[in-house]
Image (cartoon, rainbow, N blue to C red):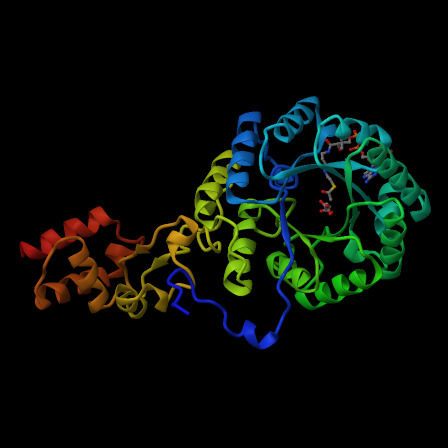
Length: 390
Ligand SMILES: CC(=O)SCCNC(=O)CCNC(=O)[C@H](O)C(C)(C)COP(=O)(O)OP(=O)(O)OC[C@H]1O[C@@H](n2cnc3c(N)ncnc32)[C@H](O)[C@@H]1OP(=O)(O)O
Ligand SMILES: O=C(O)CCC(=O)C(=O)O
């Protein structure tokens, strides 16, 4: 087999002998992503994002929550009628009046949710689990009677008694729901507990399982993948990991991990950087510079030991190539630069310096007072010319 130049495959996975993952991606950027405080996507922005998500090959786009506003409903309906390859869905409370609005949006399925955790039943609904479940099934029946698919979602599912969850999902199967969804609404899971929970639900129901992970402990992506290993079918993501509080599982992290760890390469990862920049621009929220895949420094290297190796073979210090995700490599010159790295970078810039000149330039670069906040390419160009003229 020829060597893969795009990424290093995690060969340790071979020892796990996992069955191939059977997954689909439901991206919820346009709904849960927009629930990030202060974020509003305009109609044009939602259309542009839906188009780009479709071109990545995302299987399902959650287009919005129609009862939020009349404008939201119109946009959901417009996205559902764009003729995308991606299927579309939208969110709805367990109320027939909400489902009526959702049904009119022409989506492929409606995500009808209730929480069944004691905390939510007591402090949010002030109703019993039975009352809420029966309202949910009334809503499910309405959607089904109108020929629309249904995802029955257990909000706060990870703080819901597991037996209650199993019983509710089994009962929902009787209503022919198309999916059951486990929402880790407040991000309490870790990969082991995710694996356990999904495995248990899988034993109880035949309906495909969805996993919706929040990132309150920074584990949303890992938990999503653990759920997939345990047999979850539909994985929920947002671009740049935006969403309520600490956000959701990140689309870019999940898709790249699916490729590198599990060999799933049907998604067009080369568009991920562009998609991230769109969300960054439309949301006004720039991901951290060290954010995996799309952060400004995801392919930046300064350390001399790293750069001298990268100049020969980038895979020494990059798990996957910037090209694989539509990004760019940046070689940074600063305090941690070494001689070989500096020589290589100077030559890439079209200059030739003697060893003495390189030593003098490196001494100057390592002087933190002059270069504390980094050296831009134009500043480096000036420093090279000054060194030559000395
Ligand atoms: C975990 C999640 O992401 S859940 C989705 C969160 N997203 C949003 O809230 C979207 C933005 N929200 C909104 O625009 C508004 O809150 C709306 C349009 C949804 C509802 O607005 P309002 O009708 O004014 O209700 P309000 O927000 O004051 O209260 C929520 C009501 O929904 C009820 N509710 C909450 N979830 C559900 C549910 N799954 N099924 C049925 N009722 C529910 C609450 O108990 C409360 O009921 P009450 O009015 O009888 O007390
Ligand atoms: O599970 C779902 O489909 C949605 C639930 C959700 O958004 C949440 O609980 O955070």
